[in-house]
Length: 457
Image 1: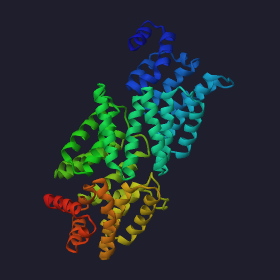
Image 2: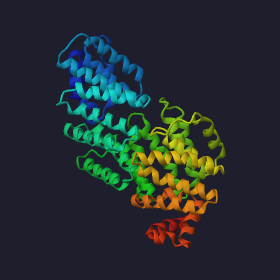
Image 3: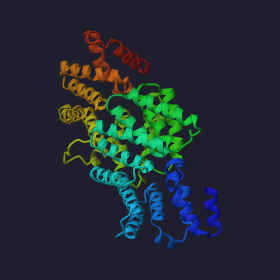
């Protein structure tokens, strides 16, 4: 159909080109991922054609979402709404559902407004035809993401599984991959990284078997795989996956995925002992982040780089972040600010303020426990152990560390402990001296951690 569209445009048969574009918009966007190709075709059509074709405006709005032109996308959605105003038929209901779906996507991408995401997704689910699996996949994904942002991993898992099932049946490759990565993140947050990794690995193999190993959205999948592998200290395979992911993400539409890869790479290089290169890459990530148009992303990336700046003793970067992290009002801890509070607690420990750190860590611990987020809880408990050690409350420190290690062993986590440096090594060694880890059945796991400490000096 691509050649036919180009032929109609070249022959100035714009109505025929528009009709074909309208019919193929969803496969182009969600199966082949050719957003920019569709955008180019639409740019060739006369402006007055959009005033009489609702679905052409829908197609235009979809293409404007990807490059973050949200206001322009909303204008086309409003044009569509005005066209169908006062009509009541199946086509109108379908369009209302798709408009709601796109508004929900815009709410997610622009501000992560959970209430708007869920409201619009439910409206879309109600209005879209039962047989429109392509878009119902997207509605289920949006619902799953809204629950994830609420910290409700159980409902998030349910809806993301439904999105994957619908997406596979419909051939919606794009949002099937997006849903798989988001489900993997939910599994990891629940303390199930091994299941997450197997899901990602199986998806890679399935895409390769169908000659789709270069699909641009696979970049996110490779990057998330690399982050799990990094925490397992499988550095060689992590580097391979991360490099592939960054390369694919760089060729995809501009978005947050590339930055997730870019901020992961400095941690990988640091684990490989390449400190200078790691610092250079972290600075490049921040420099490029300065031009990103969406306000929600920079605080996330910057807060996730704070442990790195602590590790390399970059006082200026840490002080700059402290002045801008906007937590003075003590907002309640939620999924969207959890990483920021975790980084703040790490900074307070680094500054020698364990009492203040423990206040934040207690709230983080409560949030993680109440939402079944063991993949976060084990690390919060490790930080609590370090804070108690700093207060010279050694028995409390070892107790928290034992709880952390029990959860950490289930997930196979290594770097989360090793990257905490000498204070963590001293606590682990103290537990060995007291025979604590052997009695707790953690001896083999702790010895594997201490071996890496010794290898890295």
